[in-house]
Image (tube, rainbow, N blue to C red):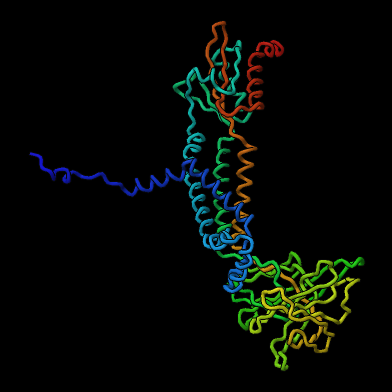
Length: 477
């Protein structure tokens, strides 16, 4: 007699590890999944372009990033906190973007792995048998009635295909049919292209996760700055030289740059445009140069606050004056220093003069302004400023791009894959040779692939050559 517990005695169906991974594999090689991921990547990339992105240097400093967010709030309002939480202000290194990137890479890998056996089978073990109806339905087809016997036509067709550098395969069980192809491994160009996409995605991921790109790092002459980003490096501008053409345009400018880790110098080189100094994957590229102001700042009692060499790296709208800025965090003040720009003809500032403007930190309210002559001291906004002298500064592009080599390799593979697929297209043709009721042999050519006029013309020429056999034999006689 069956009991109520009998059902528990039966083994429940179990899902093995193979079934689990098989389901994941089927999910990722699904074309719809791949399309969704491509669209998601496109949308996120577009948003990364349209939405303001915080500089990595800003994000590395909590106070600077908070200040940046406050400025962003004037544009994005209540959405600012939401966009910040989901990482849209640093889109290309955000967890969401990297997750979609990884999923897209897995989808490409699955689709490629799924396709390789098919490509290999077509290249090494092609299907040589087709039905008679195939020769009537194929997209590209041609035919010819030749006075040659079936065996003679077979030899003639085989010879023509071999001369055209086709591989010819005969099925022993169907001697009336031939299979021929050319560039049989060309479809593997798509595998190279897919692999290239994976490599490029890896490169972008490495750069987004561990790279940085600071476009305008200014170093005053004899000054030293921290590179930051966890590199532990410092850069010092030992000397600077510039030369000009007769029309006044820059001819060459070179920085004698030294790089330190702590107190130890690890590298030194003359840096020019397109001749960077590279240390531990961090490259120092010459990008600009200009004038800096060596200024000493003291409080109202004359107690020194700081001595700064301030690069005058920006220009006013009328391009007559160059200016720079330094923040005094303890005083909560921003100090702007301005001098006549190089080549300016209408500046109100004479050579050897600087204009000082003092603002509240992050504010636009002017606390005081005044002009200070070189070598003298002046009081502006309750502080005492001494303009010591002018100095040169160099502007550097400092970057670490660990994914660059991967992107270059991937781009090369992508080019090879595209060229292989486009310029060496896989050509396939099936040929049936049978007796014609009117005598001689009927030769039928057929190809099911996408229609190609040039390939169709080639088959037509082969067919015409078979039809003209009698005339050729008569001429030869």
